[in-house]
Image (cartoon, rainbow, N blue to C red; front, side, top):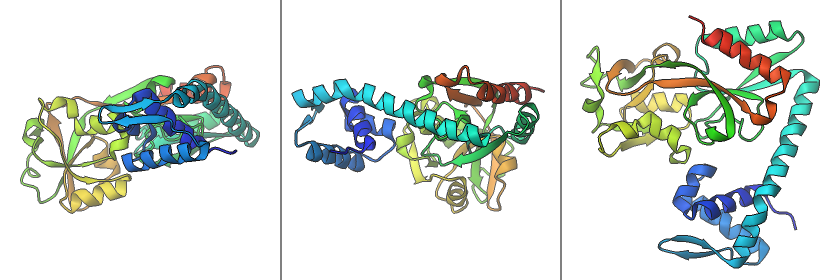
Length: 298
């Protein structure tokens, strides 16, 4: 019998969280899709894995047996995938670097050029990820390193070095009543609808909604988007506003959207991340040093 590892990951998330709602934040799928995956696995195995109730999802005896074995199985499979993909990239002398949004801002191209100087014959291949993949493929072994906005789901399982911080500004439709202001207090935005990343991105989405800096006021969601272009379109069309790094005013300038400084909200951080298994990988570590040398320089 062949079982899709995606189904096993979904099962394990529910087993460990005891809740479909919390598990969706780990596997980045909607609750209906997660429910379908669990039922599909039960159907393929021919056993019931969970007892469902209003209080959550409790493992059956069969479910506990599977939950005991799945982590080691998935870890072994993930390591096999990571090393196989990495071997293929080494033979091609390519370091694949994932990124979200503007990566390390203006330092990005300098980092890539410096890496090529330090590693003659190698090249860093940049791959942009959607906001539904906040680790930009690093967690799945699809890339060797990543330039990311912090915090992101699964960050604790990876190595991360902070490169720099920058202020969070607000992106507004150009016709918004506050668009003419030179600076806006965040409390003035609490009741505004926000354009948000998908709920599955968990803490990453909450950071860009400043969910912990609203004095308990609930967030209003005006639209949900996964890519910068859709995000800009939603703001320009008046579906909502959004917090953004200060650099967005340079990288994502667009007619119909204005950016303004915001007081009363903390900064955002950019970091370079890599897998713990690559602590002794000289190519990955050369790239990390390029990031630390260039992105942190004045």
